[in-house]
Amino acid sequence: MKPSVTPGMITIEVLTRSGRAAPVEFRLNRNTLGVWHRGTMTAWFDRNDLFSWLSAPGKPGARLWGTATTFTITETGIAITLFEVDAWELRPTDLDALIDLVRNS
Image 1 (cartoon, helix red, strand yellow):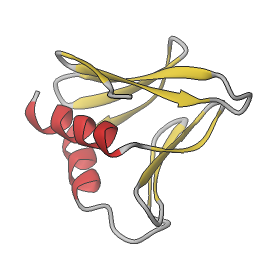
Image 2: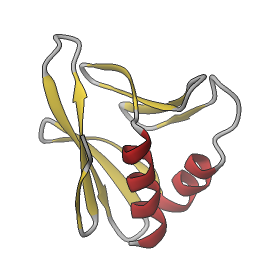
Image 3: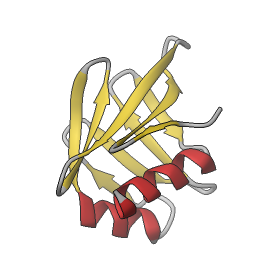
Image 4: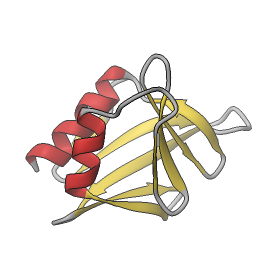
């Protein structure tokens, strides 16, 4: 499934611990990117820091922490962890859309 892309925002679908699908929104502001889940902002990241980290994230196990959201390097990609969601690995299309959003919008 491709992410939903609108100006300044992308939405991806993740599975919660209960096995239900739930949307996660990445909303870009001027200098920050907010992560929204179930109508609540779970974290915000500095736009430039996030772009740098996503573009060259480092070794497996490296993390970028937000308030209630974490990006983690896995052996095969980048995972996001947030309330009700255990380490959901971003699909390549989701990751590409997120990098494009942070870089180009």
